[in-house]
Length: 140
Image (cartoon, rainbow, N blue to C red; front, top):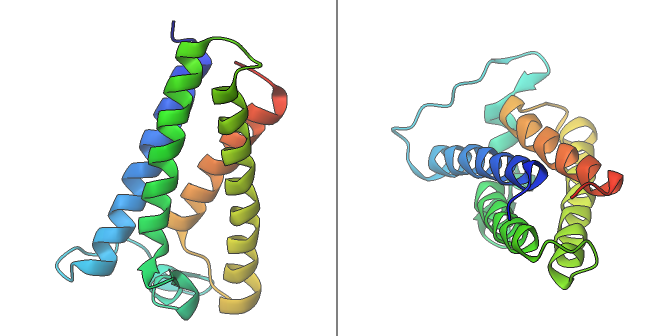
């Protein structure tokens, strides 16, 4: 049985997956335009082309797609399990906590290392933090 909270997790995972896929496409396909201002502190191009935007040879968008895909699978599995103490719920909570830690690090990189903010990245950060808030509240 899928609860409203499971649906919310799946919707947020889907949105995060879409944004991450867009950022991946921008990285690999030059014909895909980057829809973001590039003046002042908001400068997606500078963030997305910085050395910090690639980890182990892959852009962060690819890592984001993988993270949201795994989260969607964990959310669906935990939603079917229905028990708050199930292994699937624990795995989902650990996965989201790891994502939140990564987001804090990425925000640090954007603000203090790169000195610019990407609005697309910020949307992913907000999605992950919303998911973390759901997990921290204990809602199923």
